[in-house]
Length: 496
Image 1 (cartoon, rainbow, N blue to C red):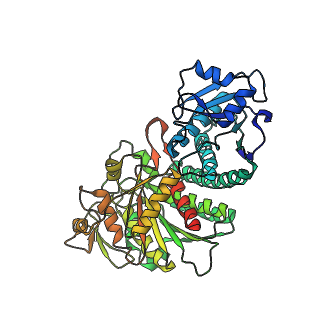
Image 2: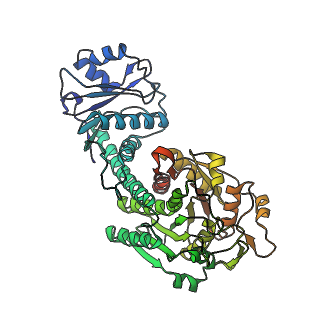
Image 3: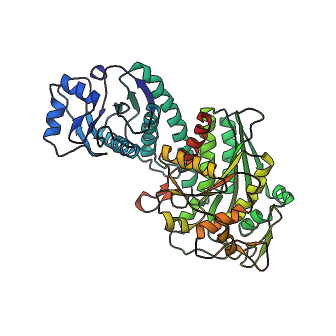
């Protein structure tokens, strides 16, 4: 998709579909009013005879325009004038992009950046149009012989009424495209089946990412190297698989040489059958998504490199399969982590924390400013929070607050849960330093408590994305979250 920015008068702009906003009580936005006058009141007359009231996301498509240069006009409800929220705006943009794709238009002009949105800039509004348009047009094609049609729309022009604001639109387009491209990479990796997207395949994609962006360097640690480092916890998970585990390390260094890096650690379980503690058969195919945390790290590294952010960022993806086999972990086994802590494995299906803990210990060598791990870690998070926010836990209030703010800005929200010391008692073991599960109560929290034992040397936050990384049912597929959240978090660090 091609995106451009313009302040040329709308009445002189040729367009397959012109997108205009209107508010509740059928009040036209500024550009819509001007065009309405040029069309002798056509828009206001049609609105007056239609049931659309201006609620966010309502649309009215005019397929025939008697005069002017637009083939179609799409009127989009924005909500209450002067009180349009970020959610209202995003809902309106999503509705507009879906309607344009079904209209048959090959190009479109969006005049929605002029709409005042509470606490949001022109750059943000432009970015939302790009991100949402790219998201709604995404189609998985890698393993399909019949390529799905995403529509004929190939160009979107973003309009503002002042030439001085065109640069803000261009900035938003650039950010939006980089984040959307990162989300697409995340989705593509996550949607691939487990027989194709193996730990070795993920490692190869990391090498390709470094070839695409010279600012990214990649290192792949094999099982022998991990054994030398003492990663007994990570390696224990792959013992039941014929696919060798990989530790994928991607480094992006565009910040000052003395700047401590932000380290992102993403769970890369390319398929999780649960091991000996095998999962139920129903919906087990969705366990190919157990590497969405790792896929999101790929997406963020891509976005950061495309934007050329002046930061130092390290992405670490421990990758493995978790399958039942004569060599697999057994309940009651005890393994030794890279940190030297012994772990009693009470449930082999609680494997994500076993690979993450060694990756977190590995992150210490970078003397990081902060570490954020991202994982589809617990089904308990879906029970607690549903599919709207990702779960957030951490050992640093400032870092967690920054992630909350970034989530609000990006529309990729999080909700913080406590990891009080009282929960740590659930992880006591009679036979090892720590058990890998703490029972059914507060399962999301005790999983984070487990990880916290390996993060005492740095500022750390944990994102449980089990409820937000993919959709089930008819719309089954990866969402690309939390790439927008993490990209916004890193962009914010440059502005603060």
